[in-house]
Image 1 (cartoon, rainbow, N blue to C red):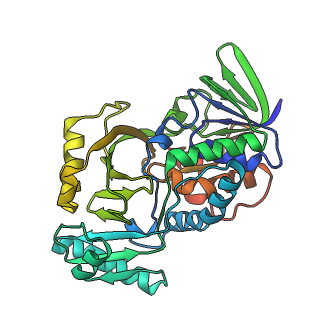
Image 2 (cartoon, rainbow, N blue to C red):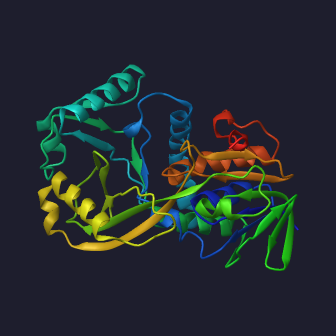
Image 3 (tube, rainbow, N blue to C red):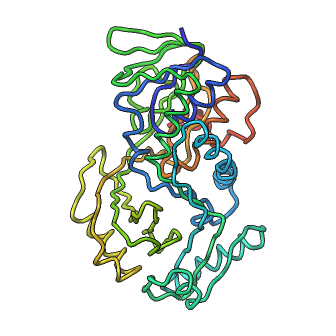
Length: 361
């Protein structure tokens, strides 16, 4: 019998298992190879400012998690001896229409007044910072504090850190149900003082959950291009599209956001839109080779907030529904779940993320 069983081996489940392993015996169960689901498909943007229109509780959750990332990455790289391609080059948000420029100006005003490090740039300054940008720019907002990481490298590092800390990982285990302090799969059961549901889009499939959780998959198509060394330094956001340069020479282009159920196919329409927007941002990208195309299924709740907290089933906790922010929210989620299991008061108010908000649905 383990102290804790974590169901799900993505960035959230692995981070929780790693955090708890310092004081508990932890078993992690995954339906497939760890880190091969939604987390594997992510772009790795750690950018709470770039889409925020106010300082609501979810923004504060994201900012708190981002503030933990320097230490999180340092510890992971020390424990795993793996580089996670953590970039501190910041993000450029570009506006090419009057409407998008007005949105950008509103964001600049509240973020600047709130004391965040943001810079409003004229078009000429954008060209100096990123010479290959060719899209017409009315206004640009530079956010030097935004970060990025390579999710696949991050997952490898967290998994290695889990091994170092003594986490037991079992793959190919399809959990069917949970009951008080018990996990059911096939004709077997396993018991633990605490059970954490962290299996992303598959979380809602488990029998015995109370309350039930309304999770739906949101398909994201994404691709990578081979860029010349140093061609782009910073993340670039333009409308609903973005570019994320990697120090390895890849340029990530993302992403669609589709209500397509569990369909994970790559489509001409999806890739066509990504490639069209990428070439609008920079006409130079038309000559860059395509390295890879893929999809991810993001676990979305109706309010697009994660589900964090204890349930009506004794010993069972939720840590799922992170939608497009699983990589960003991994450090804070791991800390929250560890606090709950160890009987400590979490450092953030969990009311907006409580599983009970769905009880009447």
